[in-house]
Image (cartoon, rainbow, N blue to C red; front, side):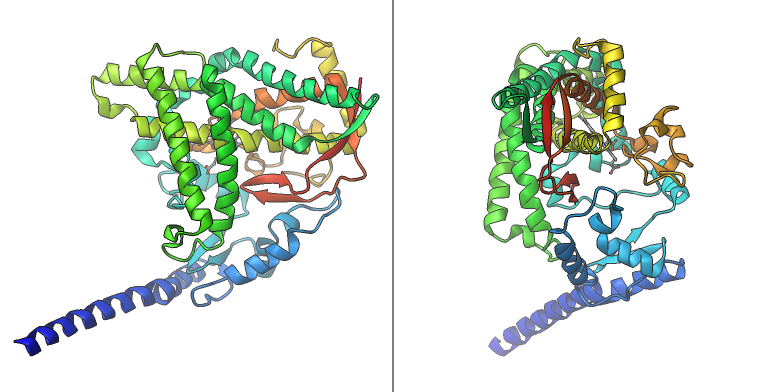
Length: 455
Ligand code: HEM
């Protein structure tokens, strides 16, 4: 009897061992080799697959060597921000692939192919959301098919230009506060002062999204923004090990802090949303408009399933913060850096602002051979006419999944830039080190020290 039991147990263990071994071998070797054959048969080229790590070791080594370097403002950016991809493309051409551990990632640099991919989201699905990245960004950005269409329909009214107009006073308040802080600093040392503008711009976009998304609850919103900033830094640490299955469940310091932050953000948002549900919905901030639109959808169909759940609304609010802050602050910081270098364009931009608004608050309202020139007037006939082909310049993406916050971001950025130009002239400090680097968005690694002169 005992002998029978132990031989059955031994057989089960051997079976489990064989099954696991086959799964692991398939994951780290057979599947990647099969994918590699598919890719090569389709005319794509890249390094041969190397067991488990693929290109990761080389990629991290190249990134770590390149990241601390500074470059000249006139230098080409891609070799600095995406050095490994540049090496691969130089070696294998525009249709190439890179191994992220056992998964290949395809590089597409041909505007026609980019167009095809972006206009057919039903065919070219987004990669499965990374469980680590998804902690900070969920919602619309990662949804697909019917659920994406449902959320996009409910959220769209919040970004309608008429609704955005109501948010201009809130944006103005945030811009005025930043200008006030700069004025105080400049005046404290005569008429000019060197300021690293990057942290102020990061703060500005966080403040704008807090006010426009949460209205009267914006102080609670600010705390969420701070927590999300910390989360992004932690995600970058954790992502280096993302190809190790289950890494995010290891009780490392970073993983434990991530969990605590996630819980704090969820419960803060739940409190804000519950408060709105109990009281009257306020229709002039993003959350209010979104909740109003959700109730309308549910009422019209008489079915709760057609609307978004509280969990869904929480995810969308988290996305507003993430998508709406780093992006716009990066747009503004690089604009200021370039206008500092090209003083003639700074003067032209100021002239235009003064012609339209005077000193009043601004409330009334890729490419050819010259690609590497700072030439803002290429946009004078509109963004779509700026490049040789329409799909060469797509900062907000394109197709059905184009950025929903494009108008929001442009209103905020134009208002902030107009007010900065009205109050200050600026130039690059000799302490400025040019080191654009991609950390989700492209950020100035060593800040953006400008000398501000009060006008
Ligand atoms: C300069 C500022 C901004 C830039 C350059 C930008 C860029 C983009 C890009 C490239 C995408 C497509 C991403 C993808 O398909 O994987 C996107 C999507 C999105 N953006 Fe923005 N964005 C900006 C500002 C904003 C703001 C201010 C908000 C909201 C407050 C926002 C909300 C969103 C949302 C919700 C999506 C997902 C749309 C969908 O999948 O249907 N963005 N953005």
